[in-house]
Amino acid sequence: MGKRGPAKQPQRLLELKGTARKGRERPEGIQGQKIKALIQVYNLVDYDVLSERGKCIFRQRCIFLIGLNLLEASYLDALLLYAQYYDEALTCIEQIKNSPTWFTPVHNMAGEVSGFVELPYLKRLDRLLPLINTLGTQFGFTPASRARLHVEVEQDKKRDIMDITEDVIEI
Image 1: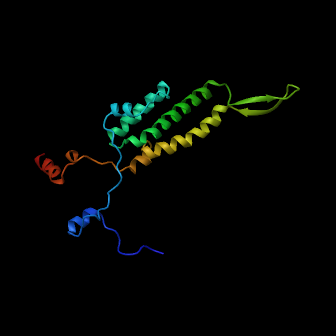
Image 2: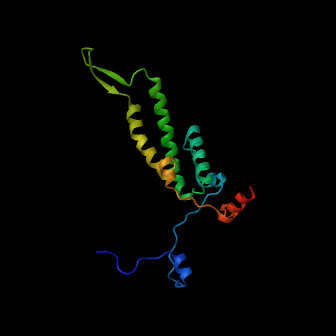
Image 3: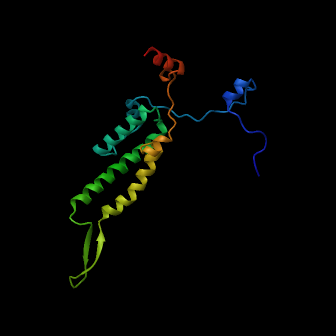
């Protein structure tokens, strides 16, 4: 069964048409507490659970999201997980690079090789990479997910088409 009634119109359009009524406003979207500076992050989150490299990853990603005006207080827990998983993945990669082989031989009672066991770091890395990718796409850390982001530009940073054409005409 389909929707009943006419299609919903945006609140701004209703206001322009003069048909908007008080009490029937539709919220444009739920907005959380925006974070504008890195010091706010330090006041909201205790990130001592991270290693030094994890803290560096966390700070870099926070600065990236603050620059795009996308960081909200509710995102910080997921961002902490992202930094922790990313740090663990880098540790696994270092351990894999340092090991001579990716598999360890298993010997039976006679001392013969009866099979091989892969490094535990390979299994851990295999589990971490999808988690990192999932969290990273939610924050826009991949090129494809960054293209889907809707970044709000502050009004003073917007340039009117007339301003742009005046600049071109002056040149």
